[in-house]
Length: 468
Image (cartoon, rainbow, N blue to C red; front, side, top):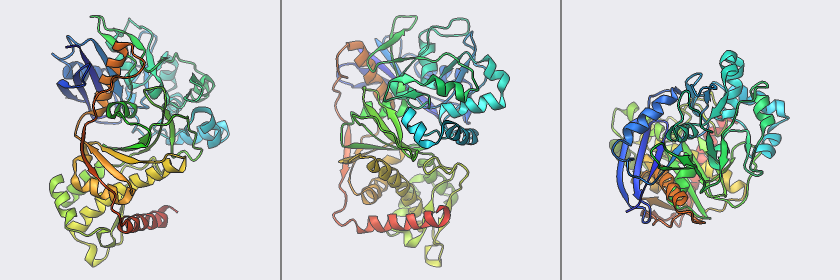
């Protein structure tokens, strides 16, 4: 059996899966935690990968890393991090994003240049923050990498004093704010503008099935990608599929044959891991809202779901706006969550629980609306992430999305996508291997969608009352 490994280096942890290169069958897995916080020492990711992969990676023929997007890893000329990495969820660069949009001439100019309008998550804004707040560290920065780039570099033997050429891929590069998916080039003018004239070296952008090199022990290292592109590849999503991922944050994305540019900034015009494109809407609040609601009510998550099932659709008029950690879409970095419609009949644990579930899914339905607004035509929604295991989540999703919801079996789809990419690079084939789909359930949209429309309408009324 020929085996390959896929790595999901997420915000919370590192997960490794080892798969049969031909069938996709998982034959081994490991996991290790990452430190909490919005800035982390990159070496902590490398330590977690070695722990998660201990005893698993010795005999694989190829490996690929899919990682959290946007983070800023700044290395000096010797390959030493000049500071802890700033992660995607570090919002201190929100002001920098506003400045950069103005300096280029507006959101339209950014959308035309790189397919996306900068927000605090993007690497380009973090470079501006570093230049303005830690200029001495900015001066020392010789290489700018993304989290997955850093791990691929370490796998190829990169370390202080040994600096092989860093690499990246189209999917992850498209989340920087200084690489154009439509033109397949770095916009070095935008890099220099953001970094106050500094021009650090950037990773070479590899094609989807191109190898980055080999480990010191001979294992092929594939290009790797960003986490969402990895999930799309792991799911085998095709035209008409919209993936809704309910992790700590929420993402809604679809494969597209054409590049997109949304000047509103709601849709990021990313690339995918197959040579196509991945228009994507990201929210900062998804499963964390359910966890917080459970904490508020003093219950665990299964009990929260049981409570929510006891309340009617619409939660007796109670609406939760789930912006607990600020928000990226809509762009409200300093917002807070809020409950609306507090009346005696609604002030019960069951209605609060129901409002939490509905608030999260209405929020993601808004994200889906942004995709349909640029021409995506959803045939079905693929619901993934930890919260997708909830039966109630699938039921409410079908109501408020208004399309069939497919719930794949629980699996590490980001890591599976990385493993599939590794198998592809190893094979030299024109297309990735045809690994089977992993579908657990399909929930059809209700023929009478009135309840879903009313839930959405109440949610939109509450949002407009607070934010216009």
